[in-house]
Image (cartoon, protein in one colour):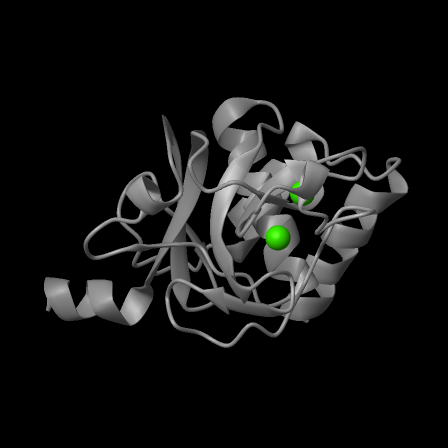
Length: 173
Ligand SMILES: [Ca+2]
Ligand SMILES: [Ca+2]
């Protein structure tokens, strides 16, 4: 039932011309949060992780924090949820780092939190190493469909980071 409601919210987001509205984004994050939400204030829960949008623009390597990672994404629903978190926090769709990077140009991708790279939501034509540049790091909200783009890691953007709820509960208890 819970998953069905989430899927209905997601499909509603996409009947609106591929553009998520602030109201739907709000419904998404409110729904995803558990009654016993273990996430600290300012973080948004999705399944077993908490996510936070970090407004300060940093290079991809500088956006990795001690105790948290840039967010990894493992499903279409999670990808949409991250977009909702950014929209709710900023009111728009700024380009934003997540934790994906390639070890072999566009052929071998990893997540900085060590989880398996088992989902992709690339924007049309991406990844592309634009103009022959090395573009090893992944950002969201690119192009008309707000998909993923590979970008040079030294450029500065806001970021979304995540932490496992079990780590937080362990700290609290
Ligand atoms: Ca690339
Ligand atoms: Ca690119």
